[in-house]
Length: 292
Image (cartoon, rainbow, N blue to C red):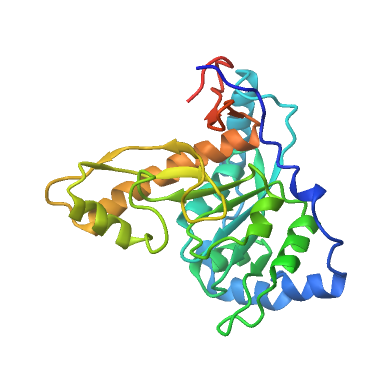
C-alpha cells in the first residue's frame, strides 16, 4: 500500500509554547519531592521496578538484537514520553516495562493524572517519575491549568503524549501543541462503541448487549473529541456466547498491553507514515516497503 512518507517527529510542542514556568512553580507541581519518595519507600515496595543483573542483561540483549537485525535505526533519538492515566494504569506499566526492556526506544518522563491517589500515580512515584495533577478541581486543588501543564511538558522536553485510561477530554490547546504526536487506546473496535460515556465495563456491556461477535482494542491519534481520531492499530478478539463484561474486558486488556506497546514502539522509532488521505500507517521494522 502506497504511503506518503511523513513521519511523526513529535517536535510540534516545542515550537508552539509560551515561556516555561519558573523553578518555584515547577517544583511545587512535580511530585518528586522527598516526602513522596519517603512515602513510596514505605508503602509501595511491590510497585518498584528495581534493576538487577537479569533485567539489565535482558534489556541489553534485546536492544542489541534489534539493532543487529536492522529492525530500527540506532541513530533515531530516544523519545521522551508523558503518560496520562486516571486509574490503575496497567497500559502505562506495560509501556514503562517495555521501555526498560529495550522494546520501546523511549523513556516515560512524566505521569499526568486527574486522580493523584490512583494506582498509576503511585506506581510512577515509586519508580521515580514526576507526577503532575491535571486539571485543577475541588477534589484535586493542587492541579495545574492547561497553560501550566504545557509549560511543564515543555520543560521536560516531551515528544509524545500517551493516554492510557485517562477519562477527561483533552483540551484543544494541548491537542494542537502535539500534532500527530498524541495517542489513546480504547477498549473497542472504533468507531463502534466509542465516544463520551463509553469507558471501562460500560464498553464491554454495550458490546455484549449489541450481539457483536468481535471486539478488541483500538490505538488512535487524539483529536478534540472523544475517540474520533485516526485509527493507528487494532486487535480483534471474539465475543463468546456466554461472556460476561468482566471476561470480555480481561481478554481485550490482554491485547491492549501488546498492541499499545507495538504502536508506541513504532512511534518512537519514527515508523509512522501518513497516507495522502490522512490515514496513519505503521511501517514494518524488517521491510521498509510493508505497512500495517
